[in-house]
Structures are given as structure tokens and as C-alpha cells.
Image: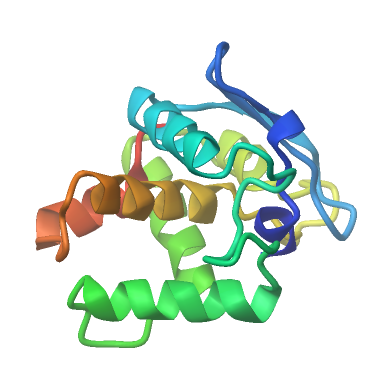
Amino acid sequence: MSELCELRWDQVDLRAGLIHVSRKKNGVPSTHPLSGDEVRALRQLRRDWPDGRQVFVTERGAPFTRSGFAKMVARAGEAAGFAFPVHMHMLRHACGYSYANRGEDTRSLQLWLGVDPTHGKIHAAERRALQGLVAIAYAQLAGISRLDPAARCDAARISM
């Protein structure tokens, strides 16, 4: 979650449709493409908060804390109609499953999630959570107050 809370606009290249992820806990830094929906949602966020340094800010314009971000994800899960509590790590797992279900190889999945294959354990990597939150922001911008099951699936797996 720290990567999301600390994500700055200078890490997002909207013209090229790329996001540069700096990992915590010795994770593998990487650059990932953004989908058209994600770029549009991020542009809207930038228009809404033009002076901010951070990508994700609270309603008052302050940077999110880990706790605040986790609470927002939990509330979004409730609003989407999930019958169980939603937390950040679930978004990561959903995206990993989506990646694997598309037939991507395990090594690519590890690198995409920020796993250092030489250590064999997962380091902090929240890119998929970022994309899930962008999907939620996009849904809010589009006036969707409650995501149907298919849209929830899309929100968890926005194109890579």
C-alpha cells in the first residue's frame, strides 16, 4: 500500500500511457502500461487536483495514509455489494489470478507483481490495487454508484 500512498505524478506518464512503480522492501521496480480507461481516469484526477504532488489524495487534498487508503478500499467493497470485507491484498490476488488465467507464464507474473524471483517471496507491489482503484474512480466519474458482478470483475482485472 505504501507504493500507492506515495505515488507521485512524476511517476505517471499520461502521454505515453505508462506508470513507473518504485517498490518498497527491496521489490523489483518496474514500468507498466496503462489502459485507455486508466489514462482517462488519471487525467480526471489530475484535473480535479491540479496542484497536488501525490496521485491519490483525501477529500481535503492531503496525501493518503496507509490506514486511510485501507478504509477507502473497504468502503468501496461494501459499496460494490461484496458480501465479505474487501482489503488491499485481495486486489493483488485477483489481479494475479487474472494474469495467470490469461495463460501468462509464472516468471512474467512474478516480475509483474514485483516479486524478486531470486528470493521466492512477494515484496510490496500494489500496481494491481492501483488499477482496481482507478477502475473504482472511473466508475464514480461515469456515475456508476454500484458495480454489477461483471463490472466488479473488470475493476479487479483492468487490462494489463
